[in-house]
Length: 165
Image (cartoon, rainbow, N blue to C red; front, side, top):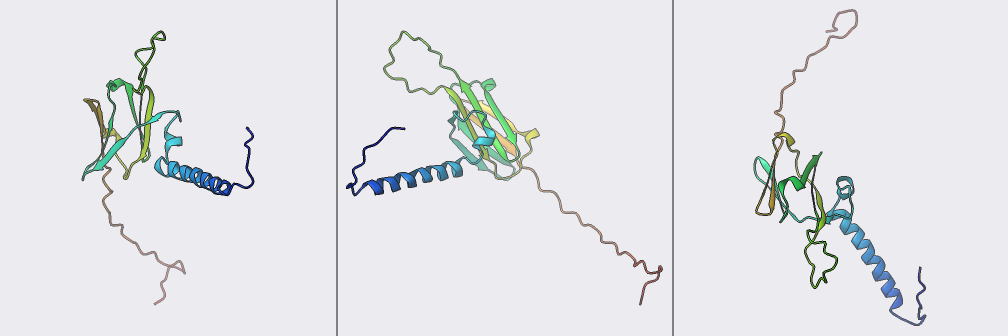
C-alpha cells in the first residue's frame, strides 16, 4: 500500500472519495446484473466477452455471435439448465519475437459468454452453424405440457362402513 499525501484543506478530497466509492459500487452492481451466470458458466474468468444477439420466434430461440477466423471444431457450445455458454479459443499465428510491432489490435486468446435463456429448450434438437464468421445457434423451445384432467374420486367415511344421511 502506498502512502498518499493529503492536503487537509482540500475541499474536493471528500467529494473525490465519495465519487470513487459510488463508482466502484456501480461497477459491481452493473457487472453482476449484466453477467449473472459468468462465474457458473465460465471456467476462466479472464476470457474476453462475446457480443451476442438473441431473438425468438414461435418455435426457436436463436443466438448469434461473431467469431471471425474460427473453425467449427474450435467452438464449444453448452446448455446447462437455462444458461447457454459459448466459448472459443484462438492462438496468435505470428509469435515472432524479433519483430517490432507497430500496431497489434487483433484479439487472441479465450472468448466466452454465458447468457440466461428466456425459456426451456430441447438440447437434443439444437442446431449450430458457423458461416462467414458468424455463429448461429438455434435452440428449439420446449413445448409446454398439455393440461390433463384428473378425476377426483370421493372416498367413503370409515365409520362402520355406513354413511350418515
